[in-house]
Image 1 (tube, rainbow, N blue to C red):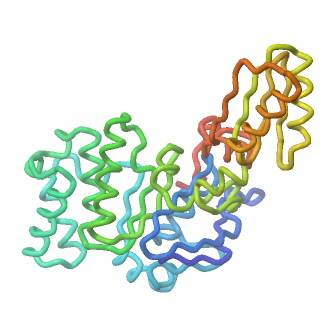
Image 2 (cartoon, rainbow, N blue to C red):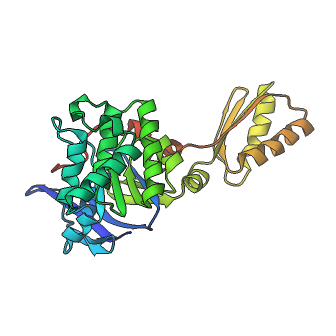
Image 3 (spheres, one colour):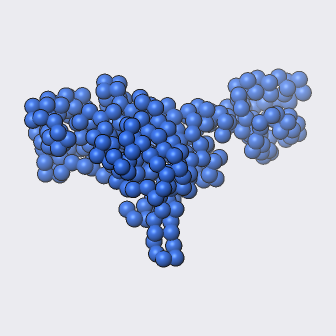
Length: 326
């Protein structure tokens, strides 16, 4: 569904300054996948999305979306994608059903087909009772569901979502994703997503692509990334400092153990296969007559992965604008 090779975008700020927003991204997305792109502000996520949706021309490299080149065949690409940007796309003083109808006609659907499709999407996205309401009278969650409906009016095989749930409360976020998941199954669509909510990417995406400084630095399933790049967090508290030091030396010898820290009677470390290792450590402590007062194993999160990859948390990655020429 998406294939890029060396996709690059530079913004010329002045004669002496060029910003390299995207630095040769290679990306493949298969039909039916839900792929999340993660990265801090300024990493190149939105620039990449805009190139894939023909809103920005690449400086170099190539990209094909739904089988068509984004530079030489932009019209063919646009017919086959739905795009939901960061802002609301519907006119504030328009009625929800009218916006969907207009979107369908714009994409070449007949009037009858536009009305039928609008009705289907309003029903599927739990907006049937809001069809005659103005967009300004809809809640934030309802507006975002309307945006998704607009992106799906022409039945595209690919839906591109650029931070679709930003600004929504947890209940509306969950509700939006419940509907998107249902839409994906009903209409058999591929979804490309950017988000700053790592729990969304973790629970929804089959693959996660991490972008930093305009480059792909990781690409795998959420579970694989957490296992390979973060590891389980092991925290053990003993009855005495001497026993803690003894067990810390054992943990340091484990293959793949990292970030081993000893603080008083408390040991913490990043390890692989935490559950298995805990049993081994408990056995070692028992054999050495070291008393344990607490043992915890926590599975890593995608934020742990991001911290490991970039040295900073995604939530603390700054607030600068991604685009130089937005």
